[in-house]
Image 1 (cartoon, rainbow, N blue to C red):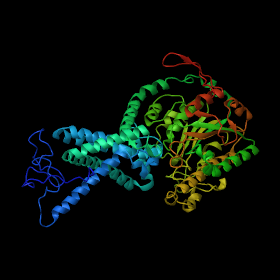
Image 2: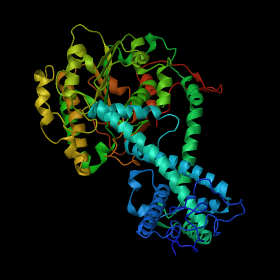
Image 3: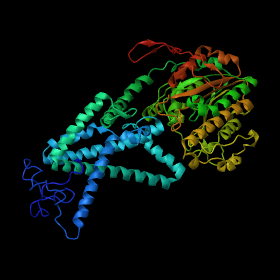
Image 4: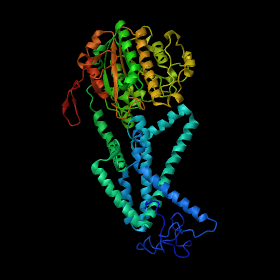
Length: 618
């Protein structure tokens, strides 16, 4: 007989409905306890009276209804606990077949509760329910983090990102909607904790009343778990029937928390190693004197955009045609891949990784970096007497971190003069961004050499609507883009279908890359050196298990510039092939500075050993 439906017991003695006997749901009336720990819950006078006899024999039929409600509640409690135990932490594993598991934690939990005395059992059940509720909330949070950032939630570092998520939601739904969503999430978390604790307590009482049945169920389930574990049984690939996912989740989260707590010391030692920290300005970037050097990040431009057949069929022709058109205009290009420090979001950590030459893969590291005096690409160019500029259309309001990068001028969204409609979470079309840069900085007469970092954000999710390219002379203050917001597919339509999402993503990348190429063709001078790259692979479009690589390309008209990187092994053109070199993004700063003439001395590691300032080429 099923454990959760075996509810009938021995008949209750006379007066069972009175004090000293359980109520319909199996709870003892307040203040009633067995005579001692030795009194068993199976005894007729104790906690063993069943729900069948608990309420007496009401003539109006309410007793039967209460029994039905009690049994349904017990079944729901069992399902709630079971689903919490086997719930995966990634959406890709959330399939019906993945729920056919034997949770080791459930088997051991029931076994432990059966051997505890009554008082300890009640306390243990309450504690177990709260712990399981917390782990369930963690799993639900992981589902969101894996879907957007390709990693689990960090119990130490990621609380600030929850606030960022609310802010992003506010930009798309308004403050009221964001506040309502935050309240709803908080209420759901509390409900999960309370309901889980109550459910485990209810099941604990049921197991104690039917100790023999429960013990047999534990024995059978335990043997089945061991057999499935030895055989590696799986109904869904990658999801073993013999599950211990909740234990693994708790262990993994604890290890990650320990790593996060000790990381500040590790990162401080890494920051202390810098071959170029004390290099004088006249020894910096000597091979780029007189050049305008632009670093442009294209939002969500990942490796899959040039290798996934469906995506590459849209993005590839833009890159191929662009390479031919740039070559006709006298420009040459080389391409490869960089492994980003992030996935799906947190673009600022990728920007910081490229600029600083350090692996910035968390908000904790980002805050520590921007509070330091680490040399960045921007500050290296400034030290060597370039004018340094940042164009940040995705940043509204103050940007305190800008002081760390030491830009001479920062153009946030409010400084670019845009009067058109909002695209993709409030940002402006890339063509306007580049037009404003041309008007405010690059096209100014009699200026000196400049270094600029430019964000291109039209390829930010939700990837719809995508602006159209227009004549550069018609861009103006951006109001010309107003009709385009209503043209084409809208986000609510696109996000109902995975294939439409992928197509919209590819079109947005094609627009961003194509716009940048067109700007170079129209405005690039003989001294232009352009480095453009992605910040990370896109969430939703790209599987969590995909690489973290992004394309990177250098474009220049002066052949001497590309001659300096001939030893890198990068491939000709704007589109790197499958065999192109792959570097970690944090290695780019030192390689770039070295290739273009910056002189850095040998550096002592924290252990005192000396290493070369020039990274090996691989």
